[in-house]
Length: 159
Image (cartoon, rainbow, N blue to C red):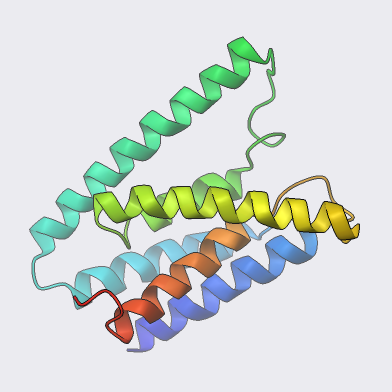
């Protein structure tokens, strides 16, 4: 229970710093990774399945990141993909997300995070609310992880 609470505090911190400054202190990601691994291993009854799901999710994430990176590099002639198009905080939060989801739900999570980021950007542009050109993807993703955790707690998915 206390591990889950610490993870929630750290996920909220990711959202806060990403929306506020578009920069997240490294220590938050390190602690979030450690506490998330500990929480998931503590709360699961089948740790072999947890490791398998995490491995599949990491493979899916690496494939996706590689495809997007190559597309930006060769199609868009964009050489500074990391730190310009996709921040290291975004990479780190997606690696942390691999711990929380089964593979099919991880795919849906990535889609939901992408759509939520697009909607956030369009709303901010329409109302001229955003002083940054960067999208707070890590902040949005951490909120979605928390929403998923609440949905599991109230048994929204019938699990």
